[in-house]
Image (tube, rainbow, N blue to C red; front, side, top):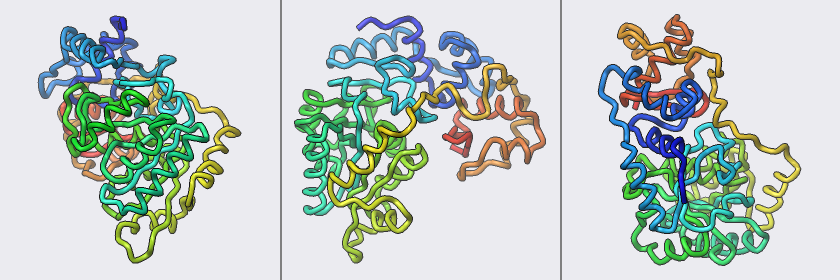
Length: 364
């Protein structure tokens, strides 16, 4: 596959340390091209040097992906799934191995605990198989337990595995054969560079893609600490349906799913219940891409005004590990919007803050 110069620059910009998806789109809207944004980075970040991935390194990644039988897709292209582009922090680039057409079919995510019971795994497998028979794609995260069971149930009809490392890294190793089968019969995708190991901080980012690709997310057996509850929360924030399978009240493995149902998500017991929920998407208004519509930004807005140190000193005490809306920071600090946005951009690029959906930030 031949990639354009701008696509290669997209990859270079997104692989730059500190550039998350929301900041990527803000830079692209401000500077119009990834190349111009890359050139501007040294002028934005004054507290540390910015190391941008070289063109040669980006081309090597693309060549290596091609040798694996995969290819890179870019947000805004016709190959990019519309369902995913509708979320604010959609990954600008995705590595895909397998059947790319699956990314454009109606999808349901099935997630749950890694240490799931036998009955829960059997239910997930049957639900996935039945959803596949109904021409839905089943998406999950290739983890142990419910994820594995869901993928196995949907192998024949098509399943998407979203991984937390590079698409060439199998985790857990026990799923190596399943990974190979999904590459051949379904699709494996990731926003991470090839060779990236699945570290703890990568899993919440992976989860937003699982839910973002899907019209609805089903949680099958999850305790209160299960990462699948993060996926459920993200699905709700993305405006997608959240469903949960009830479990026995005294089983700690079902505490999370039972709590979801108590809090108002849809109770489902079988594929027919799921179909009743997600098929209603057909009659809902069509989704539109939001990736170039980040909060607090318009093309004419002067969002990047290179900050002075005292602006940073005023903003920093207002931040903590708890996300806060940027508009609240502007009001609390009595600063101009351009000053705050410019300072926060520098702080994200130097690793001080994290940019989150909903125009929110928190300390990294």
